[in-house]
Length: 467
Image (cartoon, rainbow, N blue to C red; front, side, top):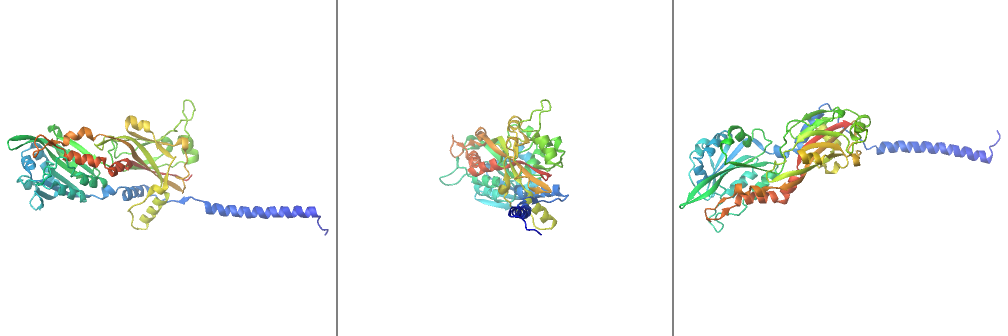
């Protein structure tokens, strides 16, 4: 066989080298694609809807899960105010509520807080006057408890010292904060009355202070609303103090989802689960993200809506009016899959998880104009800066959590101060503002304000296809 020329030899070597290099590179690329595939394996269990409801309850409902049902404690200030209250029609109308609900009864007799063993009805019909009630200790006991409680009082924390009537001392503020930081609610029913002392008449207030949680079924506030006709008591005021879970005017119902998503939806009070069974490339992106005006064919600036219809009561908090909301979007593929696996393997679930590490921007936004006009939550994709990759990394499904959070509030308590202000007996001519000051100091505390601005109003859980 004749030897190859030098040029032919170089060509053959070059060709062989190219083939070898191509094989090596392909191998490396295939290997790299396996290593760099960041898709998160996700659960495909048929029970994902129930599991998402359990997931939400386990990690994001600590407030309601931290209060015991049917354990109401009644604290009764045995001063002149409540002793006189036995003749008040409004006081009498509330007695059936206290009798049916009370499991522990405490008489505040001066500096002593006594747990009574007699039945509630008899105790409420035989209150004997003991002045100088230690209201500060009583309300602190209520705040530290894990159940509902009610305080019947005139709000006058009188000490036989230089402080005397504490007329501008916000002595309840810390207790109010402690209860609200647990995610619970406080209601005030305020009844004006006239009290005589040393020949003078004083315009006082009888306070019925309810430590409760509106999410608790059969809570004491609901019992009162269902059994007492407040229209008969025109001078009674109601005030709601809260830093969490504002009321939803459509609570218990799910939102209306864009028909193009072909979604199934199930609501669970303050959250809902949506399943989008269509593909991203052929369905969601062309029909919703990049939707066009059917009349002009022009692209809609914000695409078509995802869901709408949940309406927020913007006056839920009493001391603040909700002005605006935003949404926080989380990729929960890993967290939820681990949670589902734990349920399947009968392992312990619940506790705390930090979603901040999987928060994603530029995916879903709230229509602020619609909220400003009507208080309605309407979701759209962030069409202008749409970047779904950090959210949609799951296979075969993606699980996404969307929290609607308060972003702006307006302080309103100044207009309610007079409801909590009354004549001072120990300093005639002055006003006792201690209860009003307690609420004001609670509302303006930085930790309470931050809680309001970070609390989720409503949560959407979305299961979508792999992208």
